[in-house]
Length: 265
Image 1: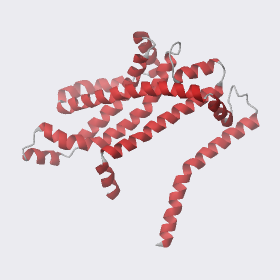
Image 2: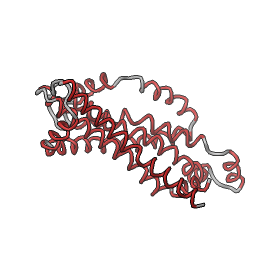
Image 3: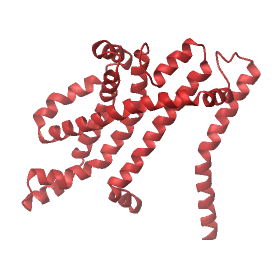
């Protein structure tokens, strides 16, 4: 038992150390390549330079991240609300589902690089086009998560509730909706990683006016500050990862029973 426990401890340590080791290897390889090749920092700065200059301009990056996060939060909240409402309507009505689902799939074929400038033309350089792009990009994964969750409900359980006199709404409330929550959170995680990118792309398209990480990237690029462009990219990635991880906390808070059954299953 001691040997097994020791092996389990070593295995756990290796799993936890894998990510830091991979990051350190990437950092060292990048730093070494820049040093040995003598490449100009305007083309490829070293990671140490990116970190140093990013820290020097941390106030600008923090301010830009705040604007991007605000756009993301507003758009994502609207997307979750609208997607949930539509998914419920599609679950209750097969006609609505057959009419709208193909349109939702088709909406995902539109590239961001085309949508963003059009939204800027139609709605100006303010907050609206950025929020709308976040909604359009994140809407589909959330709807699909709900629909798949509703479809995964066991017919036997539904029939049992109906045999006990439950109405269709009661079956939905007490069975179908809770059963769909795990898959909803799976769709939510996919959507939330896209949301920050969508906001940055919208800022990029409307960089003549506005604030945010996308605007900063354009400004730094025009100044040939590749190090600061990469610093803004890393901040964008950090915000996306933080939002992604936050969904696990929300999931544990809202559906703790799902984690208990998974752990004992």
